[in-house]
Image (cartoon, rainbow over all chains, first blue to last red):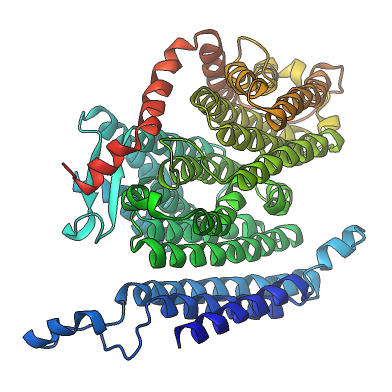
Length: 120
Length: 486
């Protein structure tokens, strides 16, 4: 099961990377960035995954016996933080994209170069 | 010394306060920056260094800790002084967005230098990315919006990969604490260490402006205001160098204080440094716009820094620290001079600045002194750096020898374009309307005198560097301090 998680997260990562590298539309690039982030978040959760694991909360005195069965909570904390960062990045870059649209009258990432006369 | 957290928290509070203060933001910015400088200098002379602060009372491997050692306090003072020096170049009234982003940048660069936890480090790098992108786009014109967006996309992609590296480290070593990783890094096999480093270094190289990740630099420098250039150079760049020194030399190093990457990886890093130096110098040679020239030149200097770090000898590291300090001071002088001259001449093209050196000899001479220091002419600060890096590289191996020759060629190219600019300053020009106040000439002059002082009297600075090198040489002290092992 953990292998499946890791495999799917790596494939999400590379789908996103492909999008970032090949798309011209800024909104599509940002969506691809989000896909990459989702992949990494899944990867981190997969690192803490335990087969048939239980929630890492000590509910009673007996639950300390199940310590080896509990999933690792640290990657989950990391993922929560990185989701928040991803939200911030997306919001901020979308705001920049709106201003880019006003300035260049286009959403193409190459709009600025094309007007400067650079051949790509 | 739990109060060390104030260095990060007070700028963050100020970032929110600045939304409401309107025109008083400038005063707030000076107060907070001065507080940071005075606080870090007080720590420097308190005699308690080194010490370790466990946030929330959770002991080091379990909680986040902030460690203050000699290396930390050196870079802490550099970052905060850079903030103050860069603030002095803000003349016009800025809106609250500028100061808000400035406070976030100040807080995050202090955090990068102070933190002892890998994930915390990553968070502060992300925070500084937002702040820098916001500062670049402050002008709101076409160029700055595009530059900010490109920087944001590049550095968030890089930081996603560094997050993957953090996950791998947690999976393999079960810890994210710097000292704990350094303690256990010998248990890692070669392949996983290489994978982790390849993923992790990318995000550091974005901040360090090294070759495959540096296409944002020139656009960002050109599009933003001089104060923002100085923020990127003095705060983000210096904190990035600290990150590389700490993470590559003290955390992920199997031998004490040396860069121990598997053979190919360290050659690749060295090749990146070469290409950065070549691109930087040739780019600067063909440019006419002063801001672009300085951006290319700071790229080249950081390439030399990376080359010195990848040599893996302590004498070369000494050179690296000299280059860091000389580049730090020289770029301040140059940006401040260009800022004043471009206000009088009305453009950033250096051909339009003809004859300004005759009217304002202090500024032009300070510019020339820092140019000579960057080139590595004897009796200027940069000379001592270049001589120890080249002297070590010549006898190390074939690739290193090529690097030494490249740095010498780069120095000649630097000489060509910087002295061309200085010559333009001093050649005959026509009369102009604007005037530069004497007060603004004072700061570049003082910084140039510091460069001269370090150059003529390197022993004064040698002591500080030897303390820093002692810390890099013995990471086990750092491990003992944080994990409080017996």
